[in-house]
Image (tube, rainbow, N blue to C red):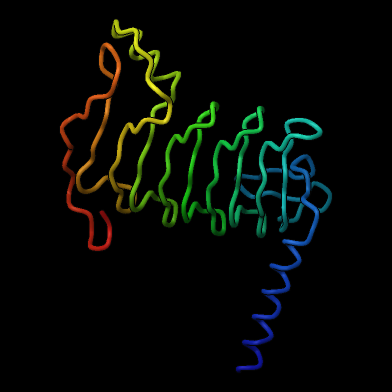
Length: 191
């Protein structure tokens, strides 16, 4: 039994090492069949590194597929080269931390997924363009810096829990904190 366990662990380690050492396959060589990526030539679920390019030198998306499904860290990039999204997958399901950024490079949001549902601390931020358009439409003329906190709270199994705090632009510039919103308490260990 112990020998079988060591053999299985060795095979898994070899698979991981083989994936990390291989050259990424271009997405053009894959077919998406309802969320499972198949190799265009064999029609088998693909395992390995993948990349999609905006052009010859700029990465659009990259990550790892395991049996045709996202597994591990997946990153997407804006055409200008800035990171747009970094998320963590396990067997085709979002599972782990994620972070997003706006086109100008400021953070947009971050949190954690557990089995495809938001779970744990979460926060989002204003984009400079959106905040400026809200202030302009409200009659104010002041600019709001991109990346200012818009909301902070927590999720439990995809539902908001505990106290949530939101900040909104005000006429004349700046941010105003709204009264906190109270949801059902978060389970022990989550806030």
